Amino acid sequence: MKAALLLFALVAGDAQQAVRFVACPIYRDTDAGKKSGCWLAEDPASGVRYDITSSPTKADWNHAVLVEGFVAQGQGDPCGGVVLDPVRVSVLEEGCTRHMLPAEGYPGRRFALPKRNVRPLYEERVKPAQPFAARTFTIPFDFGSSFVTYQLSDYYLDAAINYALDVQPATVTITGFAATGSERISERDLKEPRALARTRAEAMARAFELRGVPVARVATGRPGPSRDEAFDGLNGPSLRRVEISIEPKQ
Image (cartoon, rainbow, N blue to C red; front, side, top):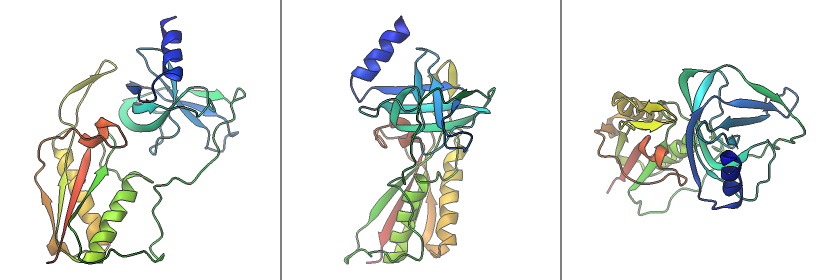
């Protein structure tokens, strides 16, 4: 009864209802085995099943996931769960038993090209007008990871590198951050190692080098204090980030 009342409140209530939990993901095969079905996860505290398909990082049914998102409005029920959008999924090391559901009449989702889609290198881009301004770019990461997420982190990293190439900067300062404060989520204590902040920054520095930004102009900075700034409205990813500050030549 409690779960049913909570489900009603989430569907009918505020679109800013935040959700954060750890669970084993469930795959719903709405596309007859073509690997484009739905991903679901149940909050162990409430028993509510959520649709996490919109996450840029897809779940791995061999591992538990950290789910962070907001209950969406007006998206119906294409997969058999309360839709979260925006939503982020971080794949954890904790193992899970594979769980797959049949379509059961749910239509799933038609593929749509995300807005955050890196353009090909051969495509001509509009360069910034002079005088060039100093800019800072934020690159978000999944929990416990330094991997550049497709159609999310790579989008912002590409924008930062393109800006550096266009303005030929005096300096590029890359600073990594990690969520080192312990948080209790779904009966688990989650925190990132401090070393992950530097690992993230060094990965971004390598990306700048590979795209042709002179190594002598790129430096990794010491991480500062965490800040309370949401990314896509979600506070968790703002702690797991890299900041890239680009200072043009005077």
